[in-house]
Every structure is written in C-alpha cells, then in structure tokens.
Length: 80
Image (cartoon, rainbow, N blue to C red; front, side):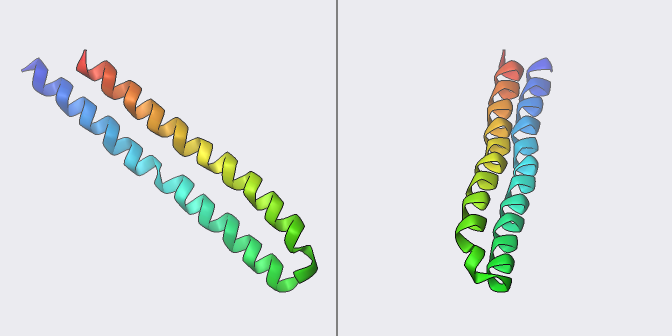
C-alpha cells in the first residue's frame, strides 16, 4: 500500500512542474509582447528594449529550470 502512495506522490511532483511551467510561459509572452508594443511606439528604442527583454527572458526561464529541478528532487525523494 505504501508503494502506491509513493508512486502517486512522484506523479504529483511532475504534475506540479507542469502547472509551474505555465507561469514562466506567460511571463515570456508578456515580456516579448511589451517589447513589440514598445518598438511599435518608439522604433528608435528597439535595441535598448530588446537587450532588456533578453535579460528578462533569462531571469524568467531560470524559474522554469528551478521548477524542473525541484520536480526531479521531489520525484527522487518519493521513490526512495
């Protein structure tokens, strides 16, 4: 009976990562939507906006990487 509970816990960790990946996905979309909007309003600011967007993209993707690392950690703890 306890093996079944551990398997379910591991599956929930992976499901949790899937749900956690929604946040960075939305964040990346908002970042580049803001760059497109800003470039449409002030085309001369494109290079500055784009460099800031890539920094924001990197920071946002770190959240997704941390999330997948934690999903593996929790899945590993559930299996032992």
